[in-house]
Image 1 (cartoon, rainbow, N blue to C red):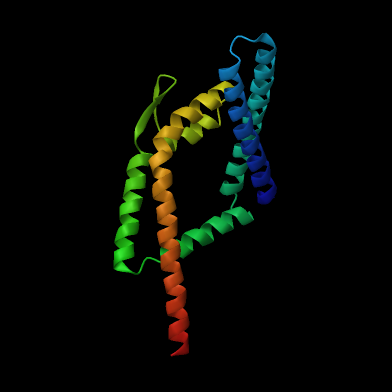
Image 2 (cartoon, one colour):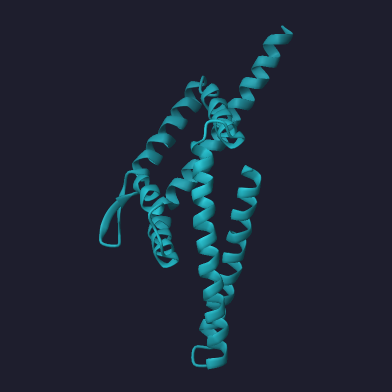
Length: 178
């Protein structure tokens, strides 16, 4: 179930990336050509359709994460457990804590959307109430820039946790052979 949801999400994101780049390119080249404008309008309608699908898939994905009996939930819990188990090296533990604090700081940073001050943790509540693909796009654009530094921290955090988990496995194998 989770794989089909992620596949649908990925397919629509790929379509969005293609449509966006094509539409932007054509718009810049042919601003005054009415036949080209129709093509751009067609791209825009397809773009809105993809955004609607992504919003529905995101809601479905969220419900899978909230259901304690889905394999996706167990996979996330296992990943978290590996990361937590890998925190016994004090240097890496300190680095992980710094990254987590930085992510928490970014996560709670406020930004303005639709004349409302939001933080990233409030976006999920707003997302479930959106009706219009235009609102979704607007919220996406507002949130994207705020979360950008957090994605870098998260990638570093995952790499650091994986490194520590690998060290723990090697250490466990070494101790079992002694």
